Length: 121
Image 1: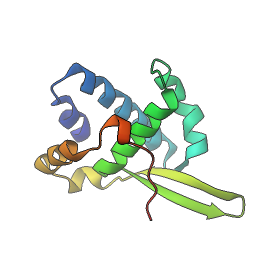
Image 2: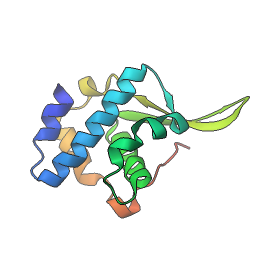
Image 3: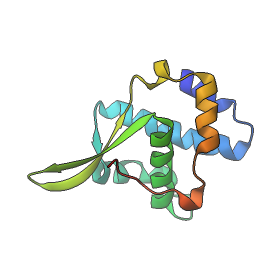
């Protein structure tokens, strides 16, 4: 798996734990085959974040970082039932990103304290 190989090149064990959670999140999204509503995603995966002090914030941070890398898309949706946020995996991403570009994007990711779920404008 291209993404897993890149992530495993990260040097610190702390980063590898975060990456493991993000890979589990990506696998969950891939199993859903399409976009997943945020309100559906949270209860499905929040159990994996129970060891964190603020589980919902950690999940939000992981989704935002994956979006910043280009691995997932975050889309606001308005329909007859109201509005929501849909998360989907960018299936073309592994074939469009180079190793160099991946590590450059990692360097520019925002830090934990400033990371929040951002919607495209």
